[in-house]
Length: 100
Image 1 (cartoon, rainbow, N blue to C red):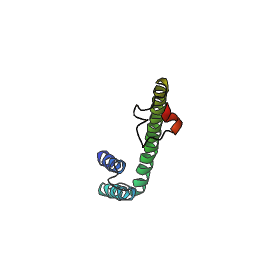
Image 2: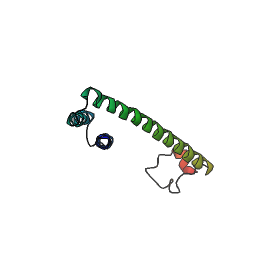
Image 3: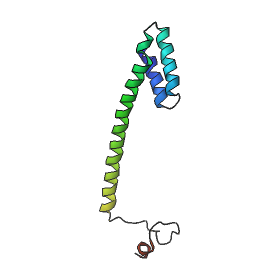
Image 4: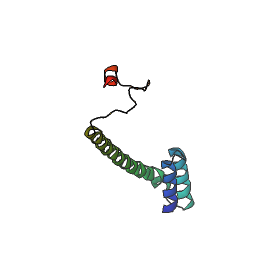
């Protein structure tokens, strides 16, 4: 039954089902296995979202680290602009920057 629970939680994470649909599936799963329904969906979904919060916190930290490293690399190169900046009409540089 643990495998079925994990599949349901993965379906939520993948956006294939909603939390409400997952709750119904989990309730049905527990009912089919003659387990206490009071312990079912709420507890599992709480655990899932607690873990998901930690997962996203970790991802955001890694994205932050990456952007800082990218900024350092850009600054080490002198903040060079694209070589075609002067010719590019859609460039967002101000006119003074385009002269350089």
